[in-house]
Amino acid sequence: MTGQSSLGKTADTARLIAGTDEVGRGPLAGDVVAAAVILDPLKPITGLADSKKLSAKQRQRCFEDILSNARCFALGRASVQEIEQMNILHASLLAMHRAVEALQVQPDFVYVDGNRCPKWQYAAEAIVKGDSLIPAISAASIIAKVTRDTEMQELDRQFPGYGFAQNMGYPTPAHLAALKSLGPTPVHRRTFAPVARFLEAGLSR
View 1: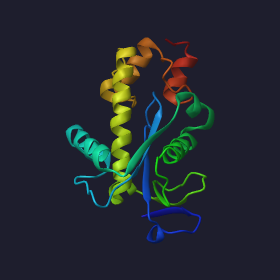
View 2: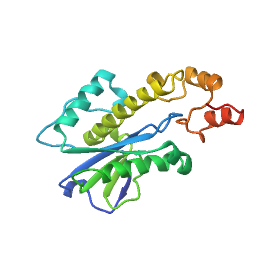
View 3: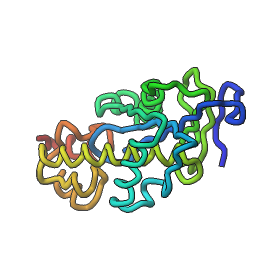
View 4: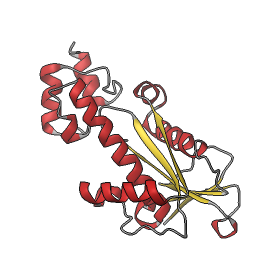
């Protein structure tokens, strides 16, 4: 369960514990979006789980409950350009760092989904599959996914033909076929191999 920890402090001694998670490491297009959440123990939220295991309806209900009942939450992101400059792993860590820093109430301790913590000043612990184990990470996962999915639906309107509203930028057969016929858009990650191949072939939009 446990990944990397930092700064020695434990969650047992913390008053304010945040969870953070990112969404969008695997897609070929769009930003990577992260969220950070501090839950209110006096306002428990039922149904929290890994956002990928919830239906769209369940995610939306949890999303609204988190907005209404969490102590605070914030978003962070890394742009397509930043992903291309620093690679997706470091861009994901940057997005989570930005989300935690943006919290209106700063935490004493942060649970991070995955096996690595960002380089920051927070006492923290990385938890593998934390989005299924730690409610605050589950909440962050839900906030990040609903936010990113909404953004991909908007990109679908801006760049029709790629199916962004359905595939959320992931490399489905239909998405790859659209890349071949239409070429990459400005929101495609040009360092990702499937996109790079079409650019090398002289395709672009």
